[in-house]
Image 1 (cartoon, rainbow over the protein chains, first blue to last red):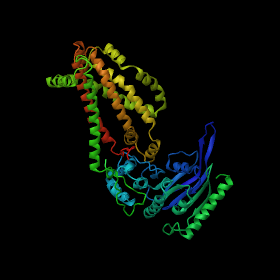
Image 2 (tube, each protein chain N blue to C red):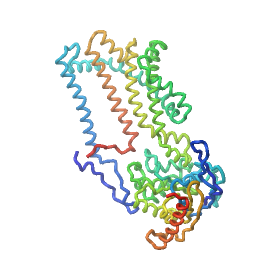
Image 3 (cartoon, chains in turn purple, green):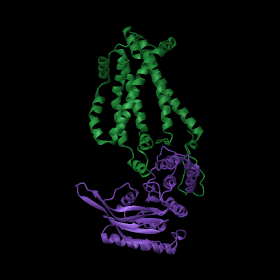
Length: 259
Length: 289
């Protein structure tokens, strides 16, 4: 399997007046292997830029990002990455299963493997019976499940998730977090999840990387003391860990004078 | 409509689905049939009321100016009966069809390129806007003077007249496509071809359909003008013949056969095409109770 190695990542955005704004300031960290790594920070702190840099959608101005694979050498030149977006970003004119084959086709997965993979991952996210439905006939939560299945169906070395639950209502989000955690655990899926939600980070993350904003810089890295199956949002130990995270983030915001 | 027709049954929840996960089905068969009957009745009612207005006018004008609807209908039947109809209408349809096909083949790529590549947008904007403001009649005159009185001038006049309109519609449509979906397709390594076919074109489909409708409307107008100039067949020629013999009945009868064909194309072909390519979109019912 694989993990992501980020070393001294630097990124500038051009401003209107021609000068440059530093977005990523020498960010270095390694992700968990087999587990979920959360990038936690305030909105607009450059977390998504970092995720885009890992995915290759965005080029870095300094440093490097590497997907380190311990498995048999991949014959693909670029690492295989799955992406789950904030809004599901489905092709609404394609049926659920065709949204998954769109990803399989793009990643050049042999067509012979498609039926088996569709069955497996649609079943995993609980959408087996909706496979020939069009996305606009599904609820927001189910569309996000399709997005998750699309990210997983290509069997990525690393799954990248960009605030995937932030647009859902609270109950649906809670339900989906729990299921996503179970699925990633079962598949031993290396995952990077970007979030601004402290509880989400404490619940989902095996490792939590805390970033400060403008420019993004790493403040602290926490290892989750609880195993995935021990995490319960109402449990005392969990609440304590969440508090620790929250205090770190709050202290950080105080220092910056932002709120 | 009975209120229970509107209630959308919620598919029974499976264990793995959260409370928020509700499925909206496409609507039951019975409700769809009722909706179809209702819309058909409204359309027929609209046409009948137009005929009624016409019939009323016959009481105020002599039959040389406003012929009776029934008389005109007899003329329509006669035209269709002689077999003239199919050769004349066929000639007109061929001119529209060929001109239209050329315009589509040119304007869809042109519009997409203008919407996606800035320099091309700046370069093609002036000719497209100028082309749009030029009246179809002038294009018809220019085409006949250039190509002479033959089929080529009809094809040219039709395609040049509607091309700018189609291109503008595609150009503006392309600008409004969802860039997040392009990013998504890049993240999943979709090929350029797949981006056009799977991601860009489906987002343009309603723009393309609207453009086809307007385009056809323009094409009919231009082709009739071209035919009036001195072609020896086609609906436009027949209308001119009616004019020369001052037969209002013949002019109206040809106009009506023309309308019938247009309605068949509009509701039959384009309507079918639209419902096929927009199956994925739930119907908008903004004013439902």
